[in-house]
Length: 209
Length: 100
Image 1 (cartoon, rainbow over the protein chains, first blue to last red):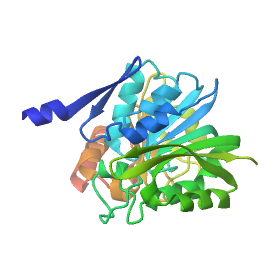
Image 2 (image 1 turned 180 degrees about the horizontal axis):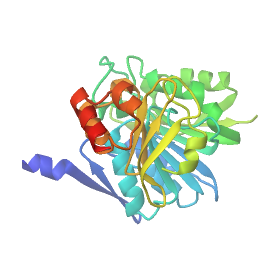
Image 3 (image 1 turned 180 degrees about the vertical axis):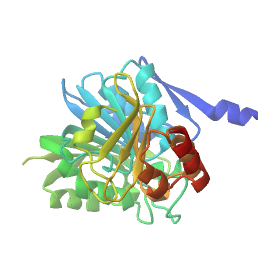
C-alpha cells in the first residue's frame, strides 16, 4: 500500500467536539456541507431526514436536539462511514442509517419535521460516474437528482415541516423555486457563499398545508 | 435496523408492500438479515444494522454473493434459485440442501 492510499484511506474531519472518519470512497465535507452546517437549526424532539448523508456529519449535528435522525445515502461506503461516525460521536441509538436511492429506503408513513439535502448539483457532461461522483454529479443540467427530490419530498414532510437544500447557481435556482411551489412548498434562498467558479445556495422550503 | 421499519417499508422496485423479513443475527437491532419482496423476488441484505435497498444497477454481485452464501441455510430456497438480482450457482445451492 502506497503512502497516498494510506493517508487517504480514512481522513479525519473535526467539527466542534465531534470527529468524523471519511473513507476514500466518500465525499469529504466541503463548503457546501458547511453552508448547511452553519445554518442548521433543529428544534428539540424533531425528527430529521438527512438525505445523502455522506460521512454523516449533518446527521450527527442534528442529533444534538433531534429525537431521531434517519440518514440515507446511495453510496455503500458512505453509509458504513455514517454508521461508524454515529457510534463514534455517541449517537448510535438516535441515528438510523439506510442505504438507498433518494426516498427508496423511506416509507411513505414516515414523516419528518426537517429534511436536509446537500444535493449532487454540479452540471456535468458525464451522466453517470463512480460512487463518489454521485455525491456531486447532477447530470447535464445539474438538476437530475434535485428535480426527483423536489417532486417527491412533500410526501415525507409533516405539516409545517421544512427542507434545507443546497445547490449551486450553476444548476438554475429559478427552476428549483418554481418546482417547490408546484408542490405547494414556499421556498427561498436563506444563505449563500461564493466559491471559485460558482455560488453555493442554501434554499429553505416550507410546507404550509 | 429496527424491526418496526418492516411494518411500513415497500420494495423500491415495484413498491410492493408488505415485505418479508428474515433475521439472522439480532442484538438491540437487527444486525444481519434479509428483506424479501414476495412479488418480484428481490432480496435486500441487512448488514451491520443497515438495510440495503439499492436498485439493481447499483448492486455489486461480487460484494453480495458471499452474504448469500453465508446465510444460504437460512434463506428460502426460492430466493437462492430464483431471487433477484443474483442467485447462487447450482452447485452452491445443492450444497445448501445437503447441509440443511
